[in-house]
Length: 258
Image: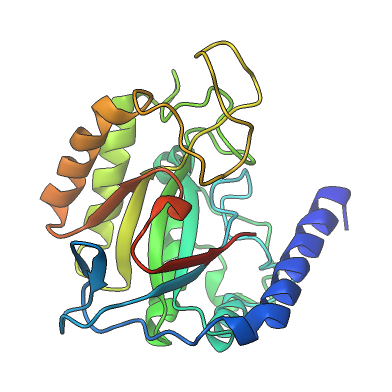
């Protein structure tokens, strides 16, 4: 096992250990019924019952592996069953624009543990994860985490690059929302995660690299938000769209991070 894979496995094990230790403080949460919508400060299901989001982040699709991490150690069903058993009801799945547009066939997983993923593309594997999550009562929030595939935040701190301009960002979101148009398991999208960078100065003041509830300057992404949101909602009316990390959600949200 190479060093990067070992570190990733250790991080995954640490997440599951922390979740197990603190599970007594996380109330089991119903995923609600049907599609979700917002009303004022509340998130409501199709029966107009309030929903509390209690979720975890499952990264990997945004990296150069183009697949959820940890599948070299467990099946995706086992991982999702563990998340469910710990009382969570939502999974935030980050991805990259490169994954959407190139849609490769990933290889960095245990084929013996995940035989039904053999030969599938990244998007087809995402379909499998979304389908099984829905079958056991979990919901999914999709997060456009990066433009190019890689780790952590996009280097330029923005929601686009020269290789993946804003037009591609919008087109990719329309494709993703259309893909899950008839699937109530996907309850929302994060148009662009709080993109950060360790390189200071190019765009003025920036906060440190990594997801954080602290807000960035509002002028960074605000002109593009209505365009992306409108395009997404045109493809699937009622889609809940957000800009920034899931930690910016205010209505009864509890998230744990990998």
